[in-house]
Image 1 (cartoon, rainbow, N blue to C red):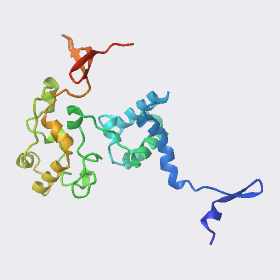
Image 2 (tube, one colour):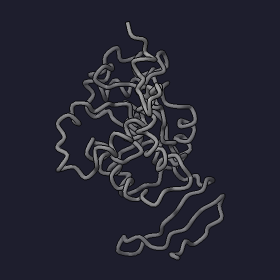
Image 3 (cartoon, one colour):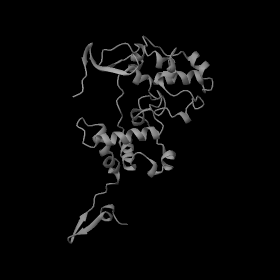
Length: 250
């Protein structure tokens, strides 16, 4: 038997030099490029190109935005195996780096904005974990695999319609549906009473508190935009604890 140390050795300039086994470091080596873009405060000059590719890989894989993709635990093995590189709007190395970044456990912090929270996916989301396993829900293996219209946190809210929200986005308060309401709306869920309670318990308490307050509480730094008569975006203001500052282009 040859020891691992000798197997990973070579001669250089007549001297035996041990080669380092980097197999266990490959993931972190590939992920470092995505880390420079997604986790650093000082961005490299090529960051805009990577953001462009990350956006398009998110859309290609069926996500509404990059944040949802970055927090997802879904491997997308089948979709990626059928991908044709010459038709993609992103490089496979960029994809490999982002997937390695995710494999290392990095997540995108969800902002405390009402819309960002209620639009979070319920399944394959690192932020929404089952109370008993502390693992994200994987829909095909969950009691909700037949509930095709159950996708986002806002699907659990009472008296909330996404189409009505598009025309009237003011939500003074909000609350979650009762288990009875959920059973009636999604009759295909298995072991429904227990399953629905577990799903509701999976939503972080911080999110529940912010959801209950509605989207008319502006005590955190946010941007606001006014609209003109033809529904075009007007001047943009930065709100910080009630103080509005007009944003101007440099």
